Structure formats: structure tokens, C-alpha cells
Length: 101
Image 1 (tube, rainbow, N blue to C red):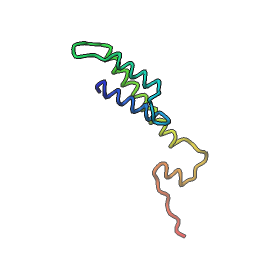
Image 2: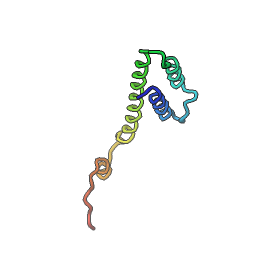
Image 3: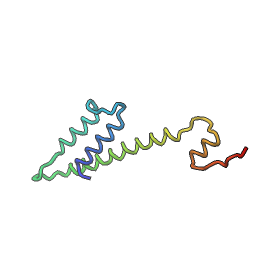
Image 4: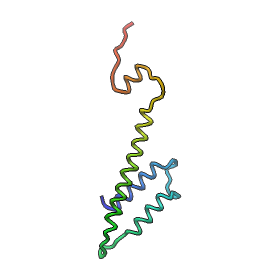
């Protein structure tokens, strides 16, 4: 991934993690943008730290995406007390036999 794609993906993940979806006043977004501006290079510059910054950005991106996925799975499968047999069967994808009356 290039630096710009990582930056856009990071901001997208921050936006999804934000309760109201707005990151204009987010300290994390400001910090990330400041770091990307700090390590910006031109074609005539070679900056080893830029590669390190891209790697660090990809690491943060993986962390944020994993946290979002974890919370989604936690909300779906977290125990809510006793479940009925039908709810448990639906959860694992089984069908209960029907009772003819």
C-alpha cells in the first residue's frame, strides 16, 4: 500500500470508530495528519523514515480494523443469559425439526 492509501484507510477507520462519524476535532486524526506531513518526501529526497512511517500506519490500520471486527463479533455472540433451543440452533445454523400437530 502506498502512503496515501494507508492515510485514507486510517482516516476511514477512525471515522467508523467515532461515535458521531466526524473526525474534524479528533486528536488522533490531527496527529496522524501531522506525522504524514512530517515524513512527506519529494522525488529528489530519500527518506528511510517514510518507509517506517508507512509500516507503522499499516500496523495502526490493522489494529483499528481488528478492533472494529472484534466489537462487531462481541455484540453478536456475547451471552445474554439463557437462550432458547431455537435461538441456539439459529445461532449455529441448524434447523429444528418441525412438530406436526
